[in-house]
Image 1 (tube, chains in turn blue, red):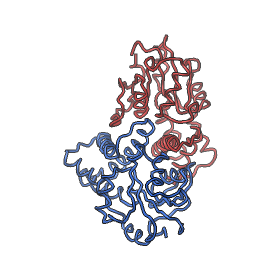
Image 2 (cartoon, each protein chain N blue to C red):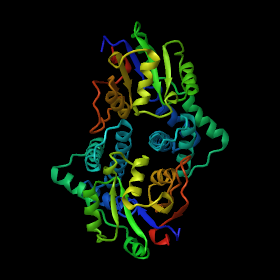
Image 3 (cartoon, chains in turn blue, red):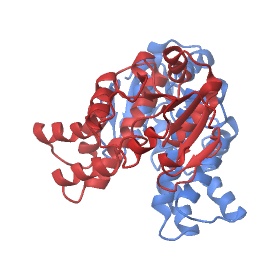
Length: 218
Length: 218
């Protein structure tokens, strides 16, 4: 792992907290429903990326995030006024970084760092700036460029084009098990960030390494 | 709808009950965990179909059903002996038909009836025979033939090849909202069977009609 030239991070769940932070906003707006709303919203958001990709119908991640929120609210029987909806969506535009992120990135000086995420360029720019991480990354790459979502290989291939590196040069780091499997299948070296002590998915390509926090990486 | 030449049904959730019936088996083996295990199992089973399809890694639905069960048991901290695992899987091989299925199919005499499902040919044969529906269908079509899963268009295209019909001739009936969207996107007339009064998915192609039970179709 030490020798890898480029370290490429997933964004949501990996660098940025879209679990506790989003649940907190949801709970403030809909007391008692924070966890359920946050989880269903995230689950539908991912489902929509996979379904749209399989149907060959690309719509950007901001749109899918709005749609997934609309579905989750309906399914839970919750009514959200426009300002509540905006505040909830804002939690996905500027999610806080996990506490160890800045320190962990500092320890990687000398390596080419990048982000590869389903998020739109605008969402990622906002999240990186909000977290005080502007300038830390050689490239912030959106699945938008491929017009299909992870784990489709075309998304991972954007890293090679944008960074001018070979697959063997890349260590890909993600907290999403399915993303780790997709990146491994594509040919990257992969570290799965298992923040919550979950089992890895069955039958999918297995990552090279597992850590619990980003500062355990190097 | 009356004029459609062929009526093609999804299997799991549409003709066959894989919700209450699977939950009941799960609950007998793991009292108090039936609903949670049944839901997580089904959710991971679907996720694996989408993820494998996007990664270009085909593995048949029986394998994915086994893998999804293994994941769900681990995630819930449950230990299943081999005989318990076999009994749980058997619930997916021979799920009971919904009560109105046989009566509803009888009312469609004169139309070409078929099944299009993610299930393997063996799983579908077992479920159809167990439900006493053998001989009712002109074709039982498995996604296995396309080596990719719904909602990829190649799966829906198998209907045209196998039945020798045009898209415009087909009414596709499914209880899965994402399947209804995929079939509509492909070009079929679609009826969504909304058995549980759920909201339809946001932003996906909208079905032509919604019913609550199959005997409301004609």
